[in-house]
Image (cartoon, rainbow, N blue to C red; front, side, top):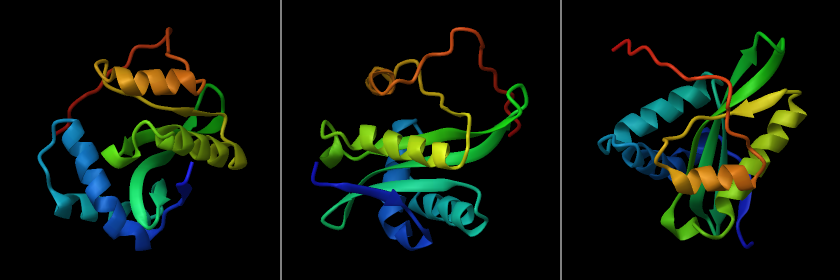
Length: 149
């Protein structure tokens, strides 16, 4: 492993924007670097998420983004791992696993009871990674969304 992971700051926007834009494209959204920049800037500016970045020789290889939340049933803090993306140059090198590990470490250090995530049913590569890292598929609850826009 020649790359490193660390918590990103607003100063990392230039490195994160292309990754975030590519992540959105993976989920069938049109490319929009300006939107990606605005969205990430707002998350940093308002301390609404925690972003980790993987780098090698100054080049960004991937990122993950956590959103703080709470579990009423557990009466505890949790984090939603909403985004995980690894650029082609970082794939098959352990970058995704390293980002998941640093996110889990952060959650433990913050006293969270769990991390949660959702992924596309067709994203078998990600599912395999999550399961290899100890994540378990929910067999009890169904997920629903109500579109508001």
